[in-house]
Image (tube, rainbow, N blue to C red; front, top):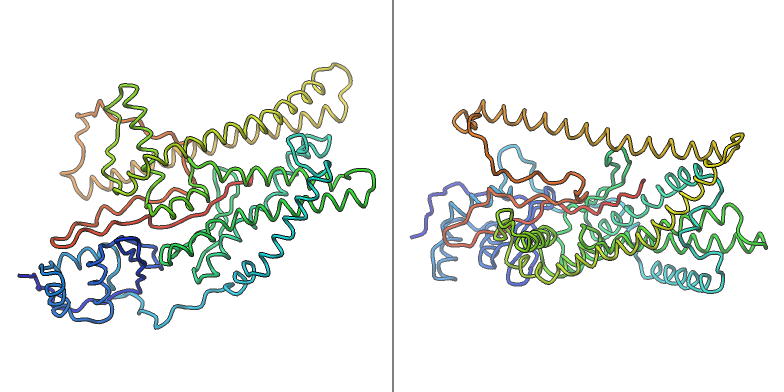
Length: 469
């Protein structure tokens, strides 16, 4: 017999139901809480959200699937996911509120806009072919003889373009009714812009691709416009590029690097989210890293450091086996990019510094410019170290506070200080952290008796770019 001890009829928040293969992705957009339900569980939940009484729902499930359902356990799972309304919750709106800037988002990605973007790209290609001066390459970063001006100019001038990148993400989300948010954050002491695409999992899969790729569209558009601006400058001057034309080419080169960065598939880049969505995965990045780690541990004989792959879904583990080479290819792309861009730029910096600082005599403007460049560089690296140490110390204090709080509330669970773990795994390297890391699935979701437990999905999707350096 089915357990029908639940007497009060449950009230639900506004939920979305999106088919994902043989399962259904059910979620709550306002809190970004999602879970993959088996088809029968999703159908049962949908009937409950439309007002079917509990007793009728149990009877329907018994008749439709010829097996009982533990309704109390099912409702407990829904409560853990935050799908059930409790006293004090806001009432469910009859219709979702209108999303601001949705009209602007539709205009930015309208057919007319795509035609304009395509025309600009064609003009850019023609200019790159016919005008060698507007082609960006590593040495074009040095748009002036002042190293200090190069450093400061590129640092601040690219901020509007990074903001535009994130704005395209946000507008692409608002175009389809997602209340995406654009904010300003901090990584170490660097200012970064970040977009939160809340509710993106609540729309069909085919509608998720443009919000992920919109930032790359913005980067490509900025690159083309900068090349066109440099070409106009060369045409007006009549004898090559002026200062502003060289500056535009330098910014175009930096923008091209941001575009190439999206191909670092070992990170959570925009293209990673496209792959993950197309392949129907929930935590492909984490599963792939765990698989690569286990392979390395197995080959090096460190089997005790291997992690349990069962914590990820079957789909994630299956795809990770062949996605791992793509992640490795992303590392190769990064190394080739560094060899073709960072190494030549660094070598040119070193040659200029040696030439300006290595000759005795009365210091000239080049000497003091180089001193200012080195001083600013040392200050930046020093601030990185200071802020990193401060954040680590702050996190340690928070951890000690959490330990003391837990020990005070649950003395029986407090660890015995006389018993030390001699085989503790090393802490993760704080220098290798992904800025768009997604929270782990909620361990509080328990399996039901008759229905397979829904699989919690990442709680939020972030399209972050850190290019304010």
